Length: 231
Ligand SMILES: [Zn+2]
Image (cartoon, rainbow, N blue to C red; front, side, top):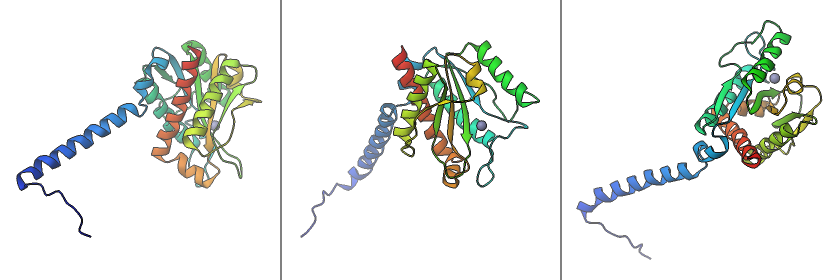
């Protein structure tokens, strides 16, 4: 059977190609606008202050990954991407560190400086970004201080968002048994353990630029859902 083609006159070929090109660009633009850009969620984050805490840094590299990658670097990369989404949505973001630096000469001094920043910034939300390490384990998990209702609600929203968007863990958020930061900071404060660097496949994901953006978007969406519900 002979296929049917619409034969365009030669003079119409270039205009038709141009039209297809412009339509494609416009379609991509519409897709980006409706695909949940950070600005589209602005009402929930507009005017909020958020303190983002990339764990470790400087002399304290944190956990070491299966192939040797350093937790402090991964934490900072994810935290910077999360900060960008939050700023796009109109939030005032403060970072506890912007580069590979510790906040004190000892672990105690470093943690005290992070708590001080949380207190002096009077931020609406405190999000600490870390990575985990334990043989045979994988999956991001968000922690809150037991009895802290705001922290628990924020953690649940972020965990739900990670579970549904990244689709690679069935973990639930959890009360932390012994987290100095969460113990010292009241209000909506959480620690996001972004995954297990000890798991080779998860280490590959956590060091991948696109996955870091996806994870940052999932955390951001959880923050927006929490603030949307709280307002
Ligand atoms: Zn850590």
